[in-house]
Length: 238
Image 1: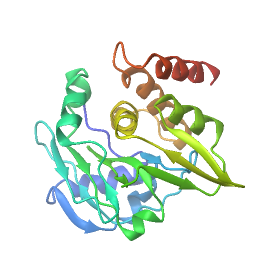
Image 2 (image 1 turned 90 degrees about the horizontal axis):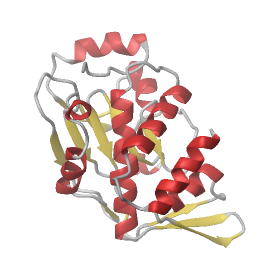
Image 3 (image 1 turned 120 degrees about the vertical axis):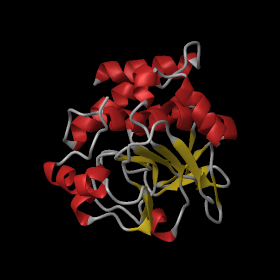
Image 4 (image 1 turned 180 degrees about the horizontal axis):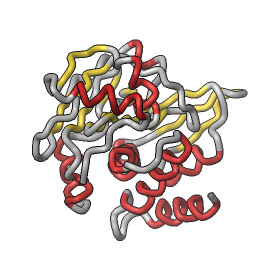
């Protein structure tokens, strides 16, 4: 399967020139021409439905012709922790058909920085690489608004617990087991769906495909029945 290049034709043209450079750009801002394409592959935290093109500086892994993929684990940053390990990522991906993994070249467990905190996301896809982001060490996320219905149902299906503290102040509480399940069976597979999507170009269509892909391939056979039933019902309503 050919590697998926970012969606817009302008971005595809620019990335052809990038392939001849080194396979990693050290902690630099994404070229403006491809920022909107990266926005199509984000798995946002608390901003569902947004296609904001802002992308904080990252260690971007540019497409190469390597076979197989590598896992890069960065320091998560002060006050943050990675919720999955390299071994868990590899084990989960090994359960998928080999054709799904063939275009993948890198999975990065990224660090959290001040700029990334201003626009946090669970995961992101660019070119042939997937990026998974750390969570707060206490495994509690804070929101200044109530959860949206789809957001509430999805996170609850994986064991996330929403608590209304006061007024519009909400928090989403995870345990090590539930957040690991959410990342390995939802976020990781969702981002892989973006990588494999060579047809869709609009934000809405790409999200629909990634959601479908995560539902079809993100839950292990015989896994959490409540999660499986909840996600199937939500899919049928769309």
